[in-house]
Length: 456
Image (cartoon, rainbow, N blue to C red; front, top):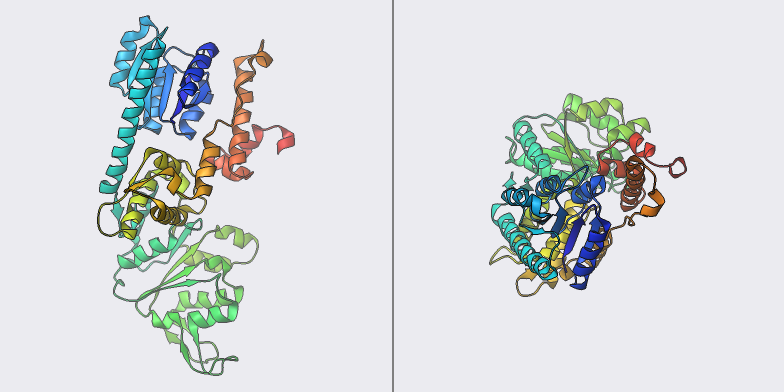
């Protein structure tokens, strides 16, 4: 079954096409054009698009151009009258697979659709193979096909040779520790220790002892002297993950370490110098902790000398297939790698990955455990991921009730359809309007203006 987008400003044509293609087992999404069609192209993936050429305010050639930019693997068939054949032929040079003249013959239409889908499947398979062969892996285990990750790699290359303190900001699972290790591996400290500490995983007394060490008798159970990680990492790097969870009392002592490069063990009266580079990370903007008075402002400015922001995986989908290839090779270091069939690729590319790279890695391990005959199919992926993509892949916007808009302006019609689309995105984001605004690339204030007051 293929997913096919139909665009035509004649509802009767849309109905005929939808009925024919559904009878042949395909899933169709219909649009009469305009901003609705552009939104579908930008936010969903399709195996094939059939679009009329002559439409207003956007024509089929513009939709072809947008589809080529957003999803170059999607095959495009143009529907045209005899008077526009030259235009259709010219459009094929711009990337269209073929054209069909109106009125079309059913057999001709179905044969052309089958050929276009075969072309699409071959193209998707080749893209998967190229992703395996040409994955741009820089700085060890960082995949940087996307512009966002290339920028991160550039920052790493510049900051690694220095001793500047770095703050890495990103959602859970985006690879903050991977970036920290890359900075260490490309620094002059690469031959010295790298020690990670999760500030949220330890209670206050244990965290302080883990960081700075303690002397015998400092507290109940301290039967021996213990060297802290700041001592053990001499000449190396300390990575403080979830630094926003560090208790205020320890923040004051940590600030002194950054200022004076000296530590004092718990229960000791002596201080001694340490030469350690500090890299910190947080999955929540520390500005929020500053507002709650749970994080010191002076410490914030000390650790955020060089901030590195990691975007979530859903915002850098170009990295998904190369990451899959990297994880497959990591799990299966020898021999040929399994291939991904088009349906599995579509699921991976359409899922929002709330757990980011970590969730993707777990999905790959799951698929490897279930795949057969050297190919990963949709059924081999975790069921919850397949189900969510399946639901999201359906067209959640109801077809327009054209009778209700009779006599009203095009502007009124588009405004109502825009509200439907905004509601759909909010629902997909679990009701989180801030995330919905980010997905729509509009401000939160603009999103509220597009909704009725009772939905605020």
